[in-house]
Amino acid sequence: MRGGADVTSAKTRWLGVLGWPVEHSRSPAIHTAALEASGIDAVYLPLPVPPESLASAIDGLRALGAFGANVTLPHKERVMEHLDAVEPSARAIGAVNTIVRDGDRLVGANTDGAGLARSLSEAGVVVRGARVLVVGAGGAARASVAGLLEEGAAEVAVAARRADRAADIASSIEGAVSALDLSDPGAMRAAAAQTDLLVQATSATLGDRDPTFAASLPLAELPASAAVVDLVYSPRETSVLRAAAARGLRTVDGLGMLVWQAALAFERWHGVTAPVEVMRRAAERAT
Ligand code: NDP
Image 1: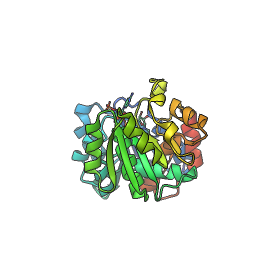
Image 2: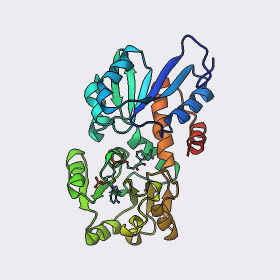
Image 3: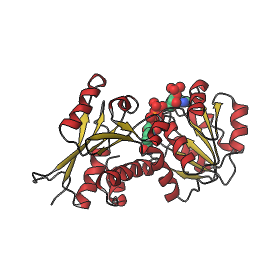
Image 4: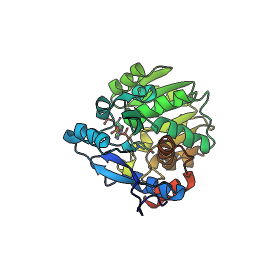
């Protein structure tokens, strides 16, 4: 039995990632490598789905017997209304990145927050009891807040340039979550001084598109024992991680979260331990 790209069986299962565009997604490379390494008779495909076709694409997953799927931008929120059920943790995040089959039902799950928690634990960063400052208020920020609270973080402050979006996260996620205005330097400095873990969850460091962004964060006020994680993994060493490392702080890049959200989805679908190192190498090669 061969898995991944080289398929000959009439029993081959199929999975895929729905996105628009989807060509940039590393999920096909990561999951194909994992299927091959695990000897699972399945293929994992990129599934380009324009927004107006999302409902029929979900019907297509049902009709064509997809074994499972991932969901990426721009469908992570909208997909929820087309599924048969959404797990409470995904509902709390407000987004689905993984679809699992339960008999004939398609159920929405989210492995992003747990993936971040696993990548931090792997890097030796203790989340239980930590005071966390999340910068950004998009889907990745939401998943981080929910995932880190679930993992036992003591409190989370969310800072965004649009303070209403941070307030929306604080009011919609249960637990000790507060909101901050990223453009209020005094409030940001005060929050940083009380932070054990800073999570960079904006897209400002993607492709180093905003070289001034790192300087706008209160990295100098973080305690010397604090850690900084940047969810962006392209480049792996972002301007924020460079600045944090220059201050002597512990840094974690976003590749671990990418790998672990995939590993947790793999385990949900296939019921076997994910070959995490194989997936990490595939993610690195796809960089
Ligand atoms: P969204 O587009 O949903 O949100 C982006 C957020 O970044 C918004 O809050 C936006 O603010 C903010 N932002 C962008 N530029 C700036 C800036 N210059 N200053 C301040 N805030 C800014 O994206 P996601 O939340 O889905 O993803 C964010 C990043 O996280 C992505 O770039 C992605 O690479 C990474 N990511 C990594 C994952 C992993 O597995 N490692 C998983 C998911 C995401 P505003 O609303 O005001 O525009």
